Image 1 (tube, rainbow, N blue to C red):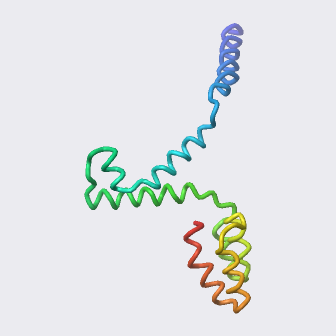
Image 2: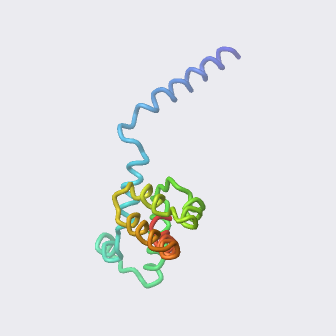
Image 3: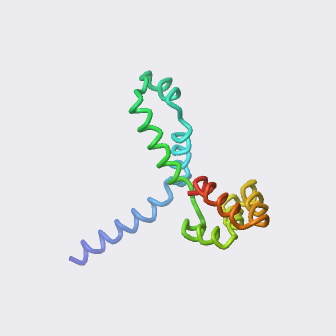
Length: 133
C-alpha cells in the first residue's frame, strides 16, 4: 500500500511540476487575442472566411454573442455599483479616469460638466457608463 501511495504521489508531483513548464505563452493571452478577433468580425468577414452568407437571425445572434464577449473582455477595476455611487456624489470623472487609464476624453469632459453643475455630470456619467460596463 505504501508503495502505491509513493508511486502515485511521485506521479502527481511530476505531472504538476513538468506540466506547468510546457507552455511558453499563457493561455489567457491567446484566448484574449482570439476573443478580440471574434469581436471585430463582421458578417462580411464571416462570409468571406466560410463562404456561407448569414441570415438576418444569424447576424443578430452573431452581434449578441459579440456583445457578450465584449463585456467579458472589459476588465473593470471599479465595480458598477461604486461607479454609480461616485456619479451621484459628483466624482464619476475619477472613476472614468481610472477605467480609461487617464488617457480618454470622457473623464475631463465629465469633470467640466460636473463643475458647471452637478446634474449634467451625472447625466453624462450614466450615458457613458455603457462604454465601461
